[in-house]
Figure (cartoon, rainbow, N blue to C red):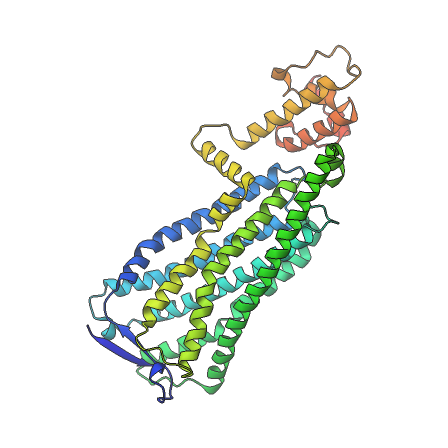
Length: 446
């Protein structure tokens, strides 16, 4: 088996400053080639399903508005997809090398392939950095929402739209600039290789790479510490909230619990599910990013001759780290599926709808709300204000006359009917106000 020595550093005092590239493919290379398509499909399909199911949950909530938590989950899913797309570019390069019949030591890629590899490296680092910051934002939002003063309610996205947009823009800029020295260094090296010139790394770039290397270690380690504290805080607040609910229920204050402690925007289930999903994502992050920190520290110590690592196959260690790190992009959907019961129910109904086993979401929601209208009207006191109106039946619950009678009944039925009209305004062609419905009486021929 042939070997090729590539010298990365000018100081020859330390033998560990050279990296050995072994020709041919090893077992881990084949494992990477088999697992990557599966992880790629899991990431793309899972992220799309996360966005679709999150949108369905928002549409079926009482407020029917986007929350900050839902927006963060969707942006995190998009970041995972982008990161896996960049991983796909690197996978294409590996396949191209495998198809090429020449030994790897003699393989000289074209400048386009080399620039693609440099861009893929930059994109992977940028996507991972963005995901780290989104997890931190997710943790901060969960802590704010779980405070006793907020009663486990979510923050509306419209109320913080400007701040959220500015924060996302800053994070995107930071994620794009952070791995930039790697892109500059790779570009200079590949251009010199294409023009048969010797690449001399500038002093300012060498210093920038050193700073970026230590910055990466500090950033990931700091993210570990921040997310660990956030996970403990979120878990404690969630347990406190659940204990408070149990205490009030044991004292026979179920009605008081529903009326006072339940969020007014109906976001309790989304908030609790998001908290559990966050804790699951944090454990996944610790598992996938710990090898990256260890790898970076070992490489830095080895490069500085702090200790020798004889017989260490850097290529195999790099492949293992990449295989584990890819799980960070691919398993978020399964985390949500396992820890969030409501998310699991929506996913089940979505697949059943795709198979034609159940009715679509809007039809089920419509029947549920009209059933609530029927039950509310049958239990309300007093006669209907519309003379000679027939007694309602479940078959006639979809008629505009029934919704009009509910609007003119008690306050409870009025609120339910208004919500029903808002839910199906495309069907009724009416707004949620009583005046608008009264104006449409002639058209409905009541």
